[in-house]
Each structure stands twice: as structure tokens, then as C-alpha cells.
Amino acid sequence: MRIGELAARAGTTTRTLRYYESRGLLSARRTGNGYRTYDENDLKLLRQIRTLQDFGFDLEETRPFVECLRAGHPEGDSCPASLQVYRRKLDELDALIGELRAVREKVGQQLARAESARDEPAADAVAPGGPEPVCELGGELR
Amino acid sequence: MRIGELAARAGTTTRTLRYYESRGLLSARRTGNGYRTYDENDLKLLRQIRTLQDFGFDLEETRPFVECLRAGHPEGDSCPASLQVYRRKLDELDALIGELRAVREKVGQQLARAESARDEPAADAVAPGGPEPVCELGGELR
DNA sequence: CCTTGCCTTGACGCCTACGTCAAGGCTTAC
DNA sequence: GTAAGCCTTGACGTAGGCGTCAAGGCAAGG
Image (cartoon, rainbow over all chains, first blue to last red):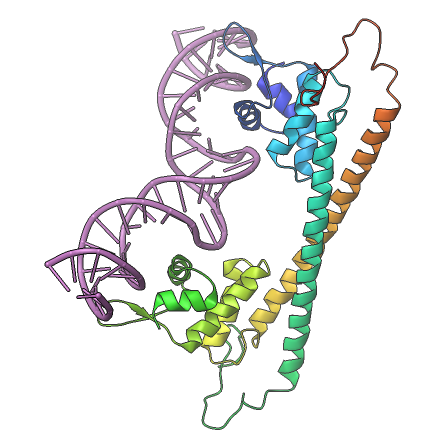
């Protein structure tokens, strides 16, 4: 099949396939007129890449899976290098999730604090002599 | 104080401050020779921005906080627009954390499956006639 | 013959938050 | 006077994964 069909069958674009090729992840034979040709094996390769991309893997991280399939293994993750990538990704995800949860906590606390502060105005907020600050996008006022 | 000192006191760089200024987030008076001058208020503003940035807020998302401080409020989150940003960010974080946890689950399952598959070789993996696939970066072999 | 639709390579655009270099001016210390 | 260290604006570079023209070739249908 040619590039358009492969792209369609994998739910992506020809631009993406050429990009993968430029990165050395997807190779193609050529017909007499220079058109790229692919087979079912290439589709399998491409689907492996796309699946990992959907998981948030960098393109470079998909390389071991691709090479594993190219080496003739039944699955992209049949090789130790691929398993290593899985493990690194799990660590990354755990770390990232942990950080995000910490941030979520802090932001939640900030919101709670700010909301309660709105109810009990600070002593210096209405200190005599200063003009009343006005919120820029509050609407209604004025 | 001048830009270098402000940057140092906020733990950032002069480039960053000029960038913020170009984005309209940080303004500066000028001395006779054209140097930027800042006061303690600017430092407070800058610290507000930096704190939010550390939380992963986009620069644009810090704008309501900055304008709130500029309007004379005691805190950057003393304005409803800032609270809105907090809430949106909480939603985003919850959604993101949820997605990441789902991905983490799937990757974990993939890893488990691939590891167990390694122990019990597939029936077709050693089908007679096909050459033994070789892992590219396994070392040792050969 | 002409249009349509697929293909080719090349190359700039995007987006964020700056890093980094270039060329030059001001001030201060020595 | 000159070197050091601060400042100025301008402008290109980075990273990732493509999107989006541009200009042109090839094949098939009418």
C-alpha cells in the first residue's frame, strides 16, 4: 500500500509518516516512480508507535519497540530494552503524578485561604487613608 | 533597585524580567541613563508570578494575580478573577492526574504482560523454519 | 487533452519561556 | 585611560511533533 492508505489505516497523516521516516523509525520501499510502499508489517510497526505516543511516550522512547519488531519479535515489548522503557516510564509517571498531587494540594489550600480571607477582610485592607482597591474584571461595580 | 538585583532577589534572570515586561506583566520606571528601576512592590509582583510558575501556571494565567496586586489588593488572589484561575487549574490538575493514573495503569499492565510472556514463550515464536529473532541491544550474544 | 487525485521534496510556522550572543553605552575602581 | 561590570535593544536558537503551503511529477478517467 502507499503512504496515504497506510496513514488512513493507522488514523494519522502522511506528514506524520514522513516525519517518522526522517527520524529513522519507519522505513519504506519505493516503487519505480518513487512512491513509498508499505506492507502489513509496517502497519504493525506504526500502530506500535501510535499506541505508545498515545501513552505520552516520546518518539525516541518508541525506538526500542520498533527495533524489537524489526528484529522479528512477535511484539514490540518482547525485548529487554522495551521493558526498560516501560519501567522508566512508570517511574516518571509516578514522580509526575506525585508532583501534580502536591501542587494540587497547595493550590487547593491557596484557594481555600483566599476564599476565607474574602469573608473576613484583613485589618489593613480597609485602613483609613487608602483608596478602596477595585478589581479589574469584576464587572458590576461602576 | 536595578534589574540585576531584582532578578537575583527573585532567584531568576534579567532575561526573564525583560521577557515579563514584554508580556506586559512587569513594568519598570527608567533612570536618566535608560536603566530600569524597581521597588519592593515589583519584587512582590515578581514573586507572585514565580510562585505560580512553579505551580505550573502559564504566564497568561498569572496575569489576573498581577493585575490584582497592581490594583492595590493585599494579595494577588484577593480578586475573583484570580480565584477563577485557581479553580480552573484545580480542574485541569484533577483531569490530568486522572489521565496519568489511567496511563500508569495501562503501562503497568503492559509491563506485567510482557514480563510473563517472556517466561512462557509463545507457540509461534519458535516455529520451525523461522530464524531466532535477536534483540538488538542485548549485549552478550555474539 | 485536461482534470483530479495521489505522490514527491523542501521549507517555514507553531508554541512557551526563556537562553545566548552581538554590539554598544554608562559608571566606577584602579 | 582603561578594564570590569553593570546596563541597553535586537534577534536568533531550543525542543517536539507535526501542520501547512509551494511547486511539481505521475497515473487514470472522460
